[in-house]
Structure formats: C-alpha cells, structure tokens
Length: 438
Image (cartoon, rainbow, N blue to C red):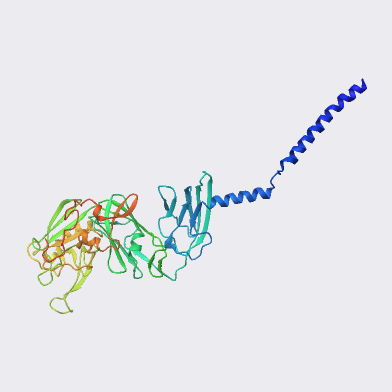
C-alpha cells in the first residue's frame, strides 16, 4: 500500500515537470522576446512622426521674421484636414477656410506683425488614423507702419448718401492689397465699390443710396498688409454705425423751390433763393457734411468793401467745404420763390430752415439743379457726382463689393443685375454736377 501510494503521489510531479520542460522548449524554439518600455516608446514616436508627416503646416515650426502676407496653410498629403486652431500672442482671432475636398486649409486675412503664432492642426491619415501637428513661428517686425482713420463714429446714425471715409497716415502704393483687406457687413443687402481719391484717401459708396435703417459694420484687416514697400499696417480697424431714415433735398435755382422728401415721400416744398448771378450756387448731388446754429459766415471781399459780410446765420446745414449751406435767411424772404440774391447759399424761410435743420444728419443727399455753375470735385463729399461705372474705375481691383449679414465679397460688376433705382430718391442723376444740369 505504501509503494502504490508513493507512485500515485510522484506521477503528477513528473507530469508537471514534463509540461514545464515542453513549455521551456517551446519558448526557446520561438526566438522572440517581450519589447522593452524604451522600444515601445521609440516605436510609438516613429509612428507619430510618420503620421505627422501626412500633415504639413506653413510657416514651419520655429520660423522667424515670417512675412505676414503669406498667411497660414495646412495641407493633408493623403488624408484630410479636420480642424485648425490658431493662437496669437496678440490675442487676435485667426479665421480660415477649408477646401471642399478637405485637403487644404488657409487663413483668410494677413497675419499681424510682431506676433507669435501657434498652429494646431488635426486630420486623418490614409488609414483613418487621427493625426495632430503643431507649428510655432513669429512674424516680422516692420521698420515702418501706417495708421488708418475712419470718419464714421461708433453707433452714430448717418444719411442714405454717406460714404465710408478712410484716411491713411502714409501714401499707399499697393492699393489692391489694402482693398482686399477691407470687409463690410450690412443688415440689408448692399452693392457698392471702393474709390481712391489720391494715395491717402479711400471711399466706399453704395451703387445706389443705402437702404434706410441699415446697420453697417466695417472691419479693416490691415494688420500685416504691406501697403507700400516696407510699409505695413499694424492695427485692426473696426467700426459699427447705422443708416437712418431717408431725407433727400432737391433745390432748383430756376424754379426757386426746394423739395424735401422724407422716407420716399414729398413732404415739403419751400420757396428758396440761391446764389446771385455773380455768385451762383454750384450744381451737384452733395451730402450734408455738418450743421450749426448759429454759424458765422464771412466773405464777399475785404472788410469795408461793398460785398463784404460778417453775419451769424441760424439753422445752417453745410454741403460744400467752400461754404455753401441750406440756412435760415429772414432778410431775403421777399425774394425767396422768385429771385436769386444769396452769396451762394440756399436761403430758406426761417421756419422751413429750422424744420430741415432739426431733421438733418450727416450724409443726407442735397442736390442743386439748373445752376449756371458746375460743382467741383472734392468741394464737399462729392462721391455722388460720379456714375456707377465712373466710380468703379476708382477701385484698384475694379470690382464691385456685395455686402450682407454674412460679410462682403468682391465680384465682377458685369455679373450683377442692373439697378432699378431712379433719381432723386434712389440714387443721383448722371452728370448732376454739370452747369445747367436738371
């Protein structure tokens, strides 16, 4: 019994030992080993490097003195770009567009000068793997910069003829680059164009008068724009203002009447007296520049001469820089409606002048017709002297601007439908500043 028991006890031990020997033999014959932590890390790094190579960011990581005009581009070699985020040291947001095929993303506007940017791009590789890549670089610091001022004030209201008026601190030679950096957002659809008046003034005017009660937001993405060799913008210019009700005045030097249209309806017809034959009020479609009550008016030659005058005038609305106004003239009431006796202004009865003054805001269209004198360009805001086709020729791009709630874009003007607006309520008449223009 003991011998049998001994055999029974040892047999499993022998079996276990044999199994272990077989296992050891199998391990020895396989020739493999468990990867070390360092090997796993190196393999993962190599895989990440390979995948990262399927996304390419320009400018590359570590770049310095980068031209801000080049922007940022992210390309997928074989897969697709899924998301791009950009952080700048200045905090300005950077937006861009992804191509319909998902292969390329490019920033929309120029980058800012003297800024550090970090780009984080994600995408998918050929096998659908998720890829992430980053690039940090810095843009150049220019030796020269320019500044830009806009006339319109924040949340101020203007008439339907107001132009957007920009003034630059230095002459601009790459006018097309500056135009491309400008964006207009409007609460109602608007078609317009930019017009260069020399090298330091740029105006936006709608093709027809602005729609009444429109909110307008302007953004000049000028930071990083090279406007002349070595001259860069270093600022983002923004402004929001509104277009108010429509108030349009038409003064005839021959009928001696002023017609006042409020919101498209003839509301007042007033007797007037315009410039005497020796000092005719010039023809043209202007817009109101400013108003004052009273305004001191001095002119007519040297003090003591026969034509000299120095008077305080009430309820005066200015439309030329040279000094033409719609204003109250109690001294010429007897001539208003029949005879032109003023020094060039449009004389109104006191009550009428006060009514018009109280309604007037900068940008209201004011047209003088049938005069023996032609209007002069730049004597006031004379943008409405020009027809639409003439105005387009003042753009460096020769493109129209189509604006709306989503922003603006440049378009070929020949692709736009014809305007249905008519003078004097919807737009200005062609040749309105010519002498004798009706």
